[in-house]
Image 1 (cartoon, rainbow, N blue to C red):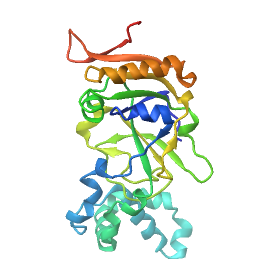
Image 2 (cartoon, helix red, strand yellow):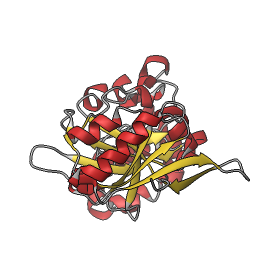
Image 3 (cartoon, rainbow, N blue to C red):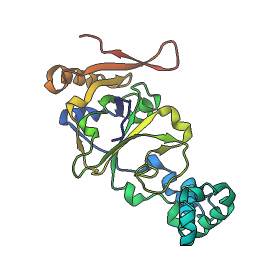
Length: 265
């Protein structure tokens, strides 16, 4: 897991999250619609004309350096050769294009389809979360501790939690800094969502530890029966006695949402 100062992250869903709490099993998403249309970049982009990326340019610089005669490389370091990038830019770009294969400009569906994932957010007051993921303000939101064991890898089950980057350059190469190309990316217009994603190497349901949950939120359209069931859960289920219940409402003064603790009964 990549370290982060974001201790609490928020998971939005419909009323089926009540069943998740009762069973302590959390289903993972496996479809790649969240990456559309860029996941299919190779299907409509001509690989011969797409601009050379920074990654491609750097890789071609290394390839060109390794093809230099041994006696030249003995007196010219790779760093010194790369420092000539501006002067050699046209040549390097042309050779990168000539060496390019269609698969060089494709996100690996095969790699991405091996994961299950969750979409998480930095706030319980996300308009997108409530309107789109919580079924038009009728669902539930869980506050999860990002340092909990559910976000840590275990033997045989890699886990990767990262913040989504917005409007970044396409990077197709798999490396330590980019283990799942395309997965932690989104359109620049969505930057206000402040989204995080966690990918699990085993796409089966995962155990949801009660210790991971600190708060449960509902909203204005959450059915009264669901709200009462949550009251009963927190009052009677020892696993959730520590959990705080809050309701998200429209702010009466501004175009934003506010959260208030459940009224005492």
